Amino acid sequence: MRLLMRRYRNLLLLVAGGLLAPPATAGLFGSPKFTTSQSDDRFSASGRTVHSSDGNRISKKSIAGGTHVDRGGVYLNPMAVMDRESGKLTLLSLSLVNQTERISGMGEPNAIGRPIRVAFITGEGAPIVLPITSAERRYGETGCSQYTVSCTTSLLESGLATISLDEYRRLMAATALAIKIEGTDRSHVYETKDISPTFISNLRAFYDRHVAGAL
Image (cartoon, rainbow, N blue to C red; front, side):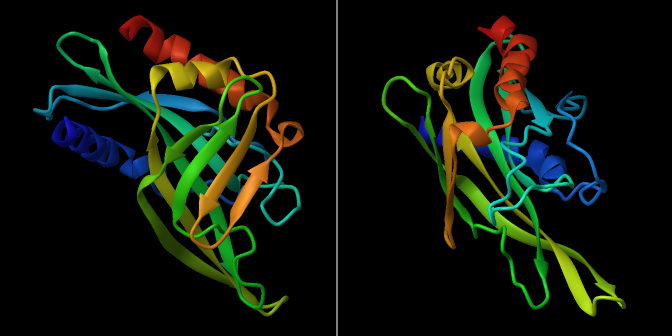
């Protein structure tokens, strides 16, 4: 069973590779758009199909205390693995992505380090605590301004959290959702008032579109 779960996680990582890369629109103004996609299985012998998503940002509020006017921030994007032959769900997970940057003279005020775990309070029942696997930090391109005499380097912190079907349903039904993100450098709590109004609705949309029919 443990070997099987490891194989599924490896498959998720292969498919999520493109999603975890800094998007070309990372620094553009405006709110992110929630999108879903399906893996191209034409050349795969794994027997699995992966449904991925992108753009499910937790909050407009930044870790440093400000407000995101760009598309930066922490995202929890649902992903689902299906058995290709039966069409049944075999694994459900959340892809954590912290899209941030390192600024010369300021450091990394919105970074958390390598993600360790994510925890949820739903308003009912015990907290849901999910360990983060395959955590990593990747630096991208650096841009410098001659006017402010500073340089900015894009930074992506990411990982995967496996979630059970019951836990996912609890998130969708949450009456007072609060989320805690923990990393090697710092932790941050998004209180109920900070959670984006589209966060739970995006979870529901993904469930209705890709999960409900695979049970």
